[in-house]
Image 1: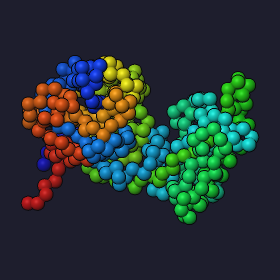
Image 2: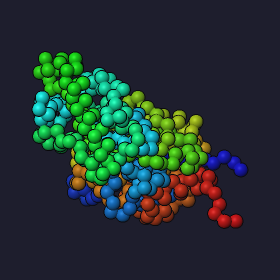
Image 3: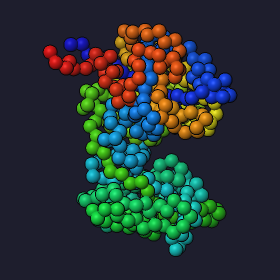
Image 4: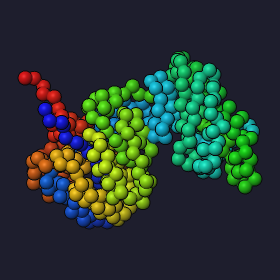
Length: 410
Ligand code: ZN
Ligand code: ZN
């Protein structure tokens, strides 16, 4: 048997939209000039995709799990573990991860600022170092700094249970004691409380914070955990599909998804995850990855960023830049490869946030049936031969298109 073909999924984050008044009740995709994305639609097969389910508003994390063929209702265990994985902190089954903020408290544990005056690296990196090797209530506590005032905490030890309340009061008031929501979580709540106390003792007098006070800045003198979740017991991508894969993404949450399922995370030099991302460079890197791997997942965040800002004109501009990326992919795609263009969810500019609308999908390979769709947009793709599918159906379809699927029956 010949080896299966290669697969690439291009996720243009938050790309889909609704009718926008200032665009004459068209969607940004319908207005933008995008000859290369359209070429893929004209030469491929298109459809509409409910990434999780009809009317379900996905987060970028749950949607990417679905696009990778996992059932998010089974494997998504909260934002903490995926955030932790995003900054390179991979836990084992039984470990619990929390998102944390560096905050400022007074000596009576009253929160003065939940973001410690928007403290960021290198200060946070220095502060985190002082917490290395920490043990709380007999539990190993590993801390890593994340973007800006954020950090992640991983608890590792016997008998942990994620059902505890947040130490972060989410307001300007006293630091909360974490409480167990079930009796089995007592040990975890104790560990969280001990961690919060120790973080204050260690960080309050830290030279970085002494210097910050002298400079009139708020000290990051405590860490406040919230949103704890257990590391999921997830079947690695390679085991599931027999393919080695890479994840090309700028945003840490998407990197986290990739890491948890065992994709290799490829750093993109200019791929900041914002609107300044060099999409062409990213496409070249993705193509290079596809040379040495069977599968590449690529995420471009810019379309979601401008959508959250409600900026329809910027969204049109970003789509036209995405088309430049599609051109590079069109010219460099290896022979026989199967490529899918989609979004992880719609982010209508009129809503400033994600919606449950289906996203446009085009799948292209040399042997694709041309279904008559002429344009890559919400309306045209909905008329395509793929009809309306769910996100978790995407991988099986691509897998079969790549001639990798097993026959069911004789
Ligand atoms: Zn997203
Ligand atoms: Zn978003």
